[in-house]
Amino acid sequence: MAALHPDIADVQDSVLVVIDCQERLWKVIHEKDALEARLRTLIRGAVVLGVPVIFTEQNPNGLGPTLVGLYELAPLAPRIAKSSFSCCGAPEFLEAVRRTERGTLALCGVETHICVLQTTLDALARGYKVQVVQDACGSRAPENRAAGLERMARAAATLSVTESLLFEWMGSTDSLGFRAIRDLLK
Image (tube, rainbow, N blue to C red):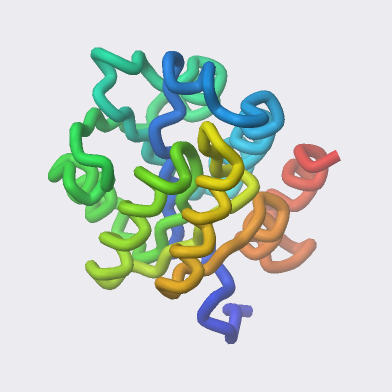
């Protein structure tokens, strides 16, 4: 049964975008270990449920590649290099999203108040629905993260958390991925 409320994420319409979780930047992210654990759960869940994953990398020559521990969970997912802070500023990103034929972007990564925020605003302006997975977003300073989340909520993005999003994608215990997701969340 399809969800009736428009803010409930549809597994058939979602794509997970993991923004700029890169080696050199990661060293200065607040509570990075807990954040990485949630990102790992989210990416694993997306893979189990057949949600496409896209990784972006801000200036990878300067900041390094996506954390290996994250990328290895979805090794066939595209990794898109970008110089714009908004992922939507990279034509390759927009093409990767278009190829998924999905209209909801589930955003996570760093930094919440810069790249995640600007991607959210641009994606909303382009007509995408945006789910920001707030417990899977980080910044160097907690107050910057909070400010970014507040702006995204005011802009009409839906704020969610990892567990809520995974359960929305499943919809019920009848989901083929229910047991695997349940085990991920233990």
